[in-house]
Image 1: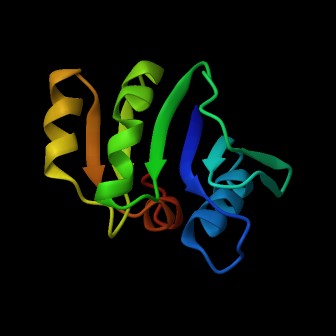
Image 2: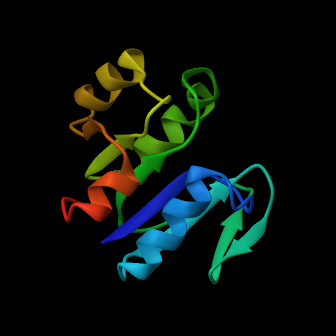
Length: 118
């Protein structure tokens, strides 16, 4: 079960950074895309939209406005679900995901992991 963290950061104070570490700690394979390349616990943060295979979950760390440019990319990955972390809620994108048969949740990846609901 591979998770793509979209909006990844090497800044240790960012929730996306903490999420990458927690996902790895929970033995979940992680791919990451951010504004800058870098590495977080051996996970390479890509800058380009890599056509990853077998993405199960996309965990979003981009605000509603920043998400628009990624709609087609996310849909092309055919994930099973998209997690909208706090501050990323986007009803317009929910409708697009639903019409493409992709589940979505307003949730916090960190909370899901810490309560064994991931």
